Length: 125
Image (cartoon, rainbow, N blue to C red; front, top):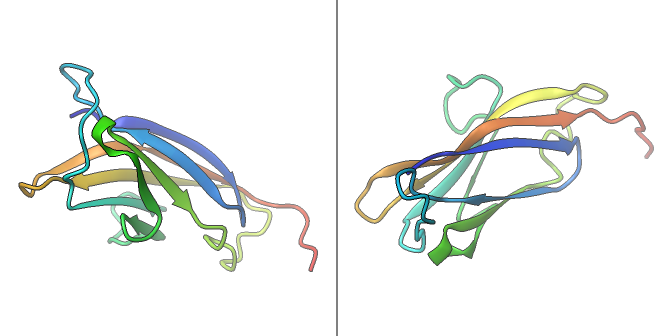
């Protein structure tokens, strides 16, 4: 399986969704992920930070299968992410990946890359 690339930009304090397609690197065919026992998306400042990093989403919270037989899932980063961390006005460049665990226990990188969070200017209450 090949890992897709993630290059997402979101605004601090805003809800953000993006989709990932799981595919086989040799055949380029989409991979059925309906039998996966879990899928994670982890966001970190530094790749070597311990899990769960800044945020870790799962099939239970934040990741939804859109078309599992055709390898399509959607990751939802909540609007509360980094909302109270003192990052007002600061643009952050973070690491993100999406990994899956298949029914036989194998772990697969589905997508990996960068998440840029643009700092806001207005802080109206």
